[in-house]
Length: 275
Image: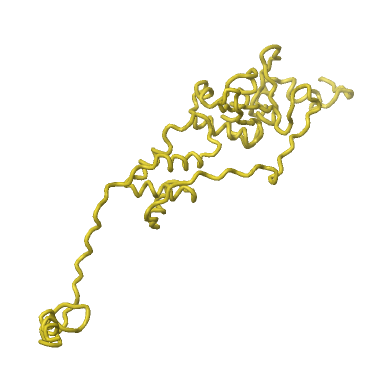
């Protein structure tokens, strides 16, 4: 009969759980990602987890930010170029770029070249809230401009006014372009016998490829510059026949139609002749 060794540890302590039995460990391993990483030595970009795991950015916005940060300085990152590179269309790419602007990963400014052209300059920020180059260490948080220091916003261009601003016409215009400033201009177009679909197409066709800083200003300009001519004059429809109630003539007691009591046509003629 075997004898026990009092100095041996209990069986429950004879192994470290999950290491001596690999098959048992495979079943006990929790589900989830397993990283098979290899260290990069060339052609890599350092991306912060604040971007890769951002809780509010869409997957497309995160992917575009990673792609833009991996590009060399001077590479084109306008909407048209990105739409040619990725399967997503210009509309989704423009929306993703606006997400990155909102969260500080992109800054876009307009500058005038020596030749007079207006170009858009895009600045990619790998860590929002910090500005400068590698020589600017340590980086300083960006100062947000005081709303009182911002220049006054330019007023929108004047839009045409309808000749007869009826509530129904203005209501249809507001449904088409839900902007208080633009609604009278749209009503002026609808007044010229254009359908809402035709007005929508005229105002939104052939838009610039880049994002518009003030879409309402462009629409106001088009409303005034492309206003179609008024339709040909149409004579107003004659008023409907009004049938007055029957009255008894006070002179001959004959029935005639009139808004109130009095004399018929014949009796009125006799009275005039007598007078």
